[in-house]
Length: 86
Image: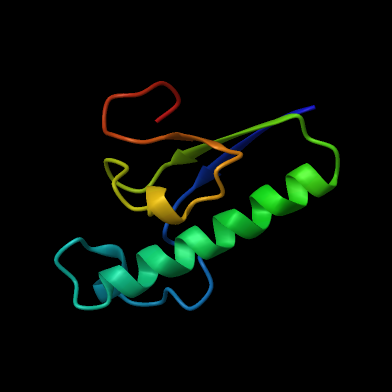
């Protein structure tokens, strides 16, 4: 089973204000960390359910939001502005 996760910062738990979603916002770094943690939970769940491959698309704005160094290393990360399915 292959899993594709498209993650947007709006909708992440505790991300409730514009300061979270904007790269110039004072709470943006907190929102990035929360987004990465939630995506990691989805990745773990996918592999626990039998996934062979998980691809994650950072779908907020131009895609520089997830913290690649903190993302579950089993997943493939797609980020950046010019990409399929954006």
